[in-house]
Length: 407
Image 1 (tube, helix red, strand yellow):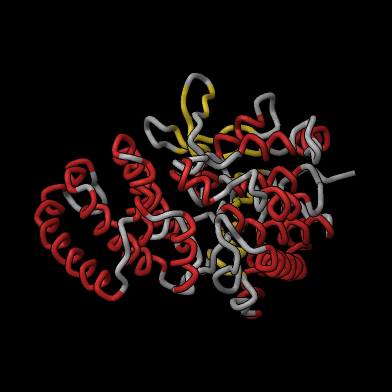
Image 2 (tube, rainbow, N blue to C red):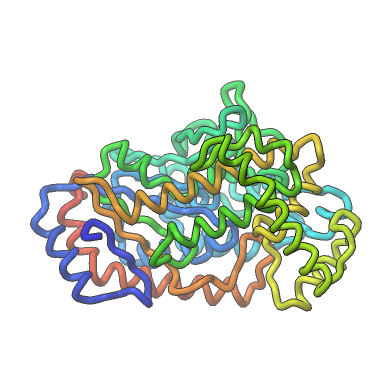
């Protein structure tokens, strides 16, 4: 664990930070990468971190890689526009023009990502500063992660080039929620988070010696254990809903073994579902109105989360039978690559060091439909954590970066 450092308000261990810093001081010049996780409106935490970086003039990074909302936040960091990410999330993504749950569930009206991106385009009301961004990238590389829809492979495309708005749109095209096709180079693309939610390994493959990761969820002491539970819950849900898909899935076990366990898992899940329905009888999700759905979630003290295990069934029904296999493939790809990314970050290979900047606990905001007060709280936490990181690491990283010295 000596090459990995967790950094949040809860995990700031001064001795550990000092030991990690000492290793950086004695190191040669390093290629430093900034990797940014997505998370929809939870990116407000990242916006706070980046605003702290901007107010300090801190940017020793030679390589930037962002996924989904992480790519959007990177755009305004590279263009040197403080509060841009904050304003985009608080004022645009909370607007009913962007996403309306009632219309989505009752009328299949998808997220209007195109409207939001037009607003930050050259002719929009709050344009990104493309000229400044291109100047910043003179000696640096910025990439947005996208997923090829046909192979579910993560692909990385340059930001702030001629097709930069299409690249951002592809990186943020959440399956089912955004149902318009995104085509670039005669291929169709979906959200980068499907194939690489936290693309640290890509930064290492591109020569990074040190990767600073900005997360939008708290760090887990034992990520593999937690992910295995989550994956098991998700697998049980999927196998109950679409048992014929079992022949197409391959996680960490052979197909034959999965088939043997399938019957046992399905039976167990059916028993759990029956008991749950006896405690909380509900109508079929496909027949629930949007208003009833929100009310039911609120009465249980829950926040609406489309990709939670409990909502996989609703997610598939919204997608429809024709797309259910496609959606399951994406979910399978997401969960397996997410676990692999966790393992890689917590045990980096020789020659790579990783620092994860993360919230202290689960953010109050969520991917969509966040309350503005919750967004404000999470933004402020991000800014505090960003300032703490600068206090401990700015001088060291500015001295060790392999970037050409600024005039």
